[in-house]
Length: 492
Image (cartoon, rainbow, N blue to C red; front, side, top):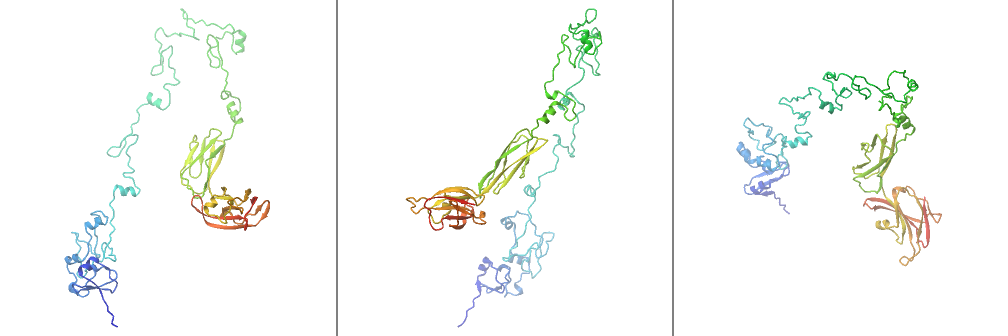
């Protein structure tokens, strides 16, 4: 039987429109020109020479080459997502453009082999990497700030054209600057004598007629310029001598820097502990001694921890704390760091889905105190009765009692398995907990007696309340028969 062989075929227009890549050695025939091409497995149809045209069909002029080759134009670049005028052709077939930007292809090289040292792909297309222009956006994307690093002002003074900043220094210290610096004008200086103020040199000039002392102990002179001082009746020779004065040595004008009023001196008795001093180098005042005697160490209490079902993601955790006294420093771990001394609450906003312990440390300059709180993520254990031979995920969750699971033990629980109308055969007791806590089976006791009369199953695909898959181990009592009275179950 004869075998018919047909070559791949089509009109010249169809070949040009499809522009396929012929396999190596595959022949493609133009039915309307009787020309054919032989594939290389790499070049597209347009880039292949005709196999039956001979050397006469190879373009020898640039104009011929332009008709046979695909070029990248401004429009092509725009369509490809590049910006016009970006990316200059550096070479074609390793031939660089001349001064006018033209590339001359040697005779016999009828196909584009490379542009900017990039060869065509299987379809004969050359993809050029066009460098983006440097704009405000690209500079920002590279991590720089526009004009960053330029001094624009110093003390609200703008630099001059040379970039220099001239800072004005006050020529003199004035009343205003002294006040701003926290000093009081003329503090400690004599401000007046006989109501006359000092001059610029600090001297007081008494006007003519005013050069005499006008008062002594608030008593003015008589017409002859004499001041007569009255001696308080209670001040006797004896009392004057007792005060350490010599008889007739004048009048007492101050006691403990307190001046008399009408000849009487009223002394204030210190009432504050800080005003009373005594000889003790370690505690110079009674107040310091009392501080030491009555000193209380700082304490702190931190709250905000919680227990959550495994699978929950907490996006914020609010921490609160209290102290027994004023503190001078405080900080919290977990990357929070030092906090203002008067702060008593903080919101942690890092997404959290695993156990995390927060510890606060406070100090009063002498001692420190700490307190901790924990955010934890757990699964639950379930127990109760059911007349079902096995339980679904929903039925496990619907068992009468659940609690956060931290171990396989179960304290003594009472279960009423008395038959009902709906369940005349009685009930099973079920105990379900995460398999991660069951390295070995618990020791079970029913009504105080150890028992192994249970059926154990493992449900590896249990979905918890957060739809997280967790393996659960389920114990059913009894193994074969339902229970029909009240029982106590304990697991240790």
